[in-house]
Length: 150
Image 1 (tube, rainbow, N blue to C red):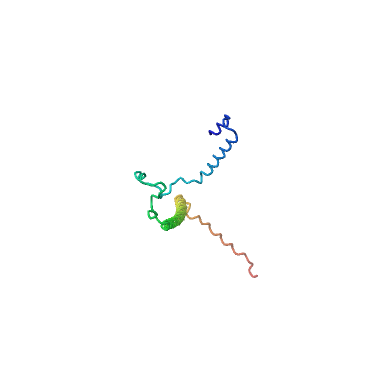
Image 2: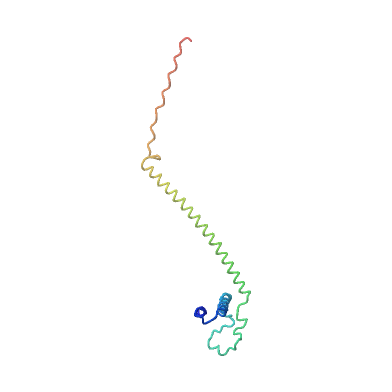
C-alpha cells in the first residue's frame, strides 16, 4: 500500500515500484510454503532454562521422543479403528432402514385394520353384514306337451 502511495505521489519511479511489487508478490507466493511451527526438539518448556541454553543447540535428545515405529503403529491402529467405525455406521444405517420399512408395514396394516373395523361397524363387511337376499330359483319349465299315441 505504501508503494502504491509513493508511486501515485510520484515520490518513487515506476521501475523501482514494479521491482518492489514483484518482490512482494514473490514473498506472498512463498508464504504458503512456510512452516511456522517450531521443531519440537528446539522448544524450551521452562523459561528459566533459556539463559542456560546455547544458541543452535538441541534442547532435547532423540530418546525423549517416540520412535517412528510407534507412530506408524498408532497410525495403523487409528486407521483400523476408523474402518471399524465405518463398518458399524453402515450396519447401523441398514438396521435403521430395515426398522423404518417394518414400521411402515405395521402402519399400513394398522390402517387396513382400522378400515376393516369401520366397515364392520357400519355393517358393510364381515359376519355382521346381513346376507344378501336369496333370489327364488326359477320355476322348472312345464314339460312340453306331446301327443298321445305318437
